[in-house]
Image 1: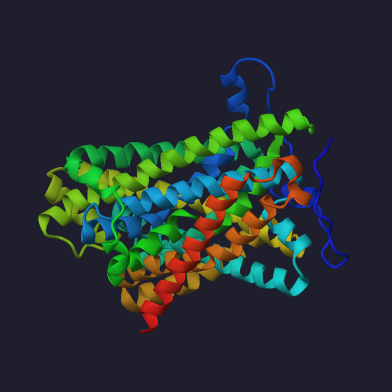
Image 2: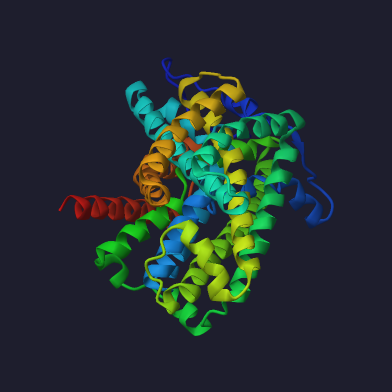
Length: 446
């Protein structure tokens, strides 16, 4: 018996297939519901890695580098906490999509008033533009470091990412997933190589995963802590994941949904564990190489790139750093396009060609990046990167609160409703995000 669905109001009708279909993949990927567990799992493997991209984009690099250089290993517990919250929230997003056949944007459109849904859409678009801003700057910096392309030209060249997105979408959803996984492997190998070269103090690393109240009471570390949460728990990923899980062609029955939930949960846990290792490795490397050598003021990606070679004694370190950054920017740019389509069509039912949607989002991101690069140079791009992550954190409640509310609604989710302990944890995470954001705003205004 199918689960209950959310009744849409006449002003905001729900159409689950439209958004998923617009993302070029609704029920297009065949899965195996029998046979070995590996074969069944591989069919559902993919959407988790599309989500994981957002948890290791250039915005994460800026916050992780700044946190490691300034405070050593002290902010590692923030990365761990934010990653655990991310895993829980992404599982809820996947459950919403699998059980109801709606993504988060469609559920918001159907449940909230027209005015409220419009405000949520505007906030989500701001978050996507902030995400794209980080990708633009990260890609431009990588091109500058690896190939000496001027920053302004690097920012301008990112417009042509549209062509890559279009090409992948034309070849099918599995090609998009395979490309993302390949780029993530490049990031993992390069960042892992630098971690080995850094030779951190592992006892101090372990101590960094123990929560400390000093992180919250120090305004400077609090700002970076909130930026790390904003860079890790990405609001647009909740919309993205609730839609991309619907690309799998499983049996639309209770057994089929339970099977999909099981393998999707495993997919996202493994993928976000992967992201956790990458983020932790970046902060640990920054702490071991910069903080311990008296370079606590390293907050810019360019400075980190140039200091790695003399401090580690090999140019390979800087090359791997730059290559991983380029792979990070390129992988993130693919998922931002997909999220943008899902959000616009889910909230407004407005369909734009993929190239038009991508060009519009990228153009909005390029303008502030060009201004900051031309006016402030390298320092401006670094500050803009961190600020973009704070904007993401500010937008999180507008995505997290509806998600927790929907998945805790028995009328909507039926027997798949969040259990009481999960509801408590989810609302605790949402409350923590709101409190941290309010604390940051107050500290900035006082």
